[in-house]
Each structure stands twice: as structure tokens, then as C-alpha cells.
Amino acid sequence: MLLKRLFTALVLIPVLILILLKGTPVAFTFLVLIISLVSITEYFRIISPLNPAPLKVQSICYIFSILIIMAANKDSLSMMLLFLTFNLIAMSIVVVVKFKSDSSILDSLLGEIQGVIYIPLFLSFLILLRNTPNGGHFVLWLWIIIGVSDTGAYYVGSNFGKRPLAKHVSPKKTVEGALGGLGAAALAGLIYGSIFIDNLSFLMAILFSFVTAASGQIGDLFESVLKRSSGIKDSGTILPGHGGVLDRVDGLIFAAPVAYLFKAFIL
Image (cartoon, rainbow, N blue to C red):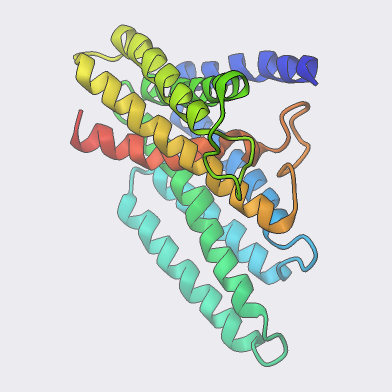
């Protein structure tokens, strides 16, 4: 398992860094789009393992996910929100038409709306962030913070964890692990930010690292809630040794809008 994880990381990490720092905006948008579409597929598998959402519902989700990400590529937050609104209207029409023959269609509507907000909308903030000055380094900075937080939490929790963080959601996660992850993320974020982010104060580097790492941990717990409610261990098997794509980006999903807003209004 460890060898599979290392091999997957060694293959994917250089490609991701290359796209982030040297790739065109379209290339990065395409990467986020692929991640979003695969994650949505895994998301539907999680929320409805025994009773899959109707094909029409899933199709609408895919269509508006693509539209939201395309709007992000145009740096249009207003258009992203407009497509989110039209998604709700489209799903409402499906509910009205299908309700008589399928009274459970409302549950599918709620799951679809949650999925569109949770995955493509939140991930679209990575595109908005990368399109800002020095955006490639900001996205890489965020990615490093989330990755180090996850690793730090795992090792500190495994060796020193005693108090459960959310035992009904993820029994193995501990308070000590969460704090260790935040500390490791703050240190890594300070080092990277000091080198690659211009005009960054010590306080802002620590604060950015802390709030994005904390957001990432919440995102990790949220996906754990989804999986536990359905009795699923991993969102998928597409990444050898790592599970599904959603398992790898769950923290990044929640941290992306936080990072974008932080840069836009605080840094």
C-alpha cells in the first residue's frame, strides 16, 4: 500500500506542479474540470450507493458543473452564481415533472444541489485564485498547506492522539492530530510563503496557513460524514494506494474559497 501511494505521488505531483506554474489558464481549468467531474461521479456513488440518482439528475449536475467551471475561467463570479441559480431551476422542473411517479425525487434534488455547490463551485475558486497575480504559487502554497496538514495530523495523531476529534464521524482522528496538523501546516506555509509570495508578513503567512488548514480539516470531516452515512470507506479506486479523487481533494475543496477570499480581502 505504501509503495502504491509513493508511486502515485511521484507520477502525479510533478505533472500538477508543471501545470500550476508553467501551464496555460486553459490547461489548469481543464485539470480542475476533470477533477470535478470524477469527484462528482464518486460523490453520487457515496450518497446513493443502493438507489442511484436518476440519469437526468446526474446529467444536469454534470452540465452545470462544466458551465460553472467555464465561468470561473472567465473570472466571472456573477456568472458562476447565475449558473448555480439556473441549476436549481432546472432541478425544480425535474421534481415537478417526476414527483407523481417518483416521490423520492426530492431527495435526489437536494443531493444534486449539494453536489454542485460542494464540488465544482468550491473547486472553481482554485481557478479564480490562479488567475490572480502570482496565482500559480498561491494555489501551490495552498496545496502544500493542505497536504502537510493532512500528513502532520496523521503522524501526530497516530503517535500521540488520545482525545477523539469527532468519534462518530471518523474515530481515528484526534484533537492532538488536528493540532499537530495545524502546527505543521503553519510551519510549511510560513516557509513557502516567505520564499515565493511577495510582500508577505510573518503574521499573514501564519494566519493564511492556519485558516486554510483548518478549513481543509473541516472538509476532510465533511467527506467522512458522507462516506459514513453510506457505509463506504473510500470514494473510489482510481488512484492506487490513495482511494478516490474526492478522497484526495476533500480538504482542498473547503480551503479553496477561503484562500481566494483571504487573498482578495486580507492580503
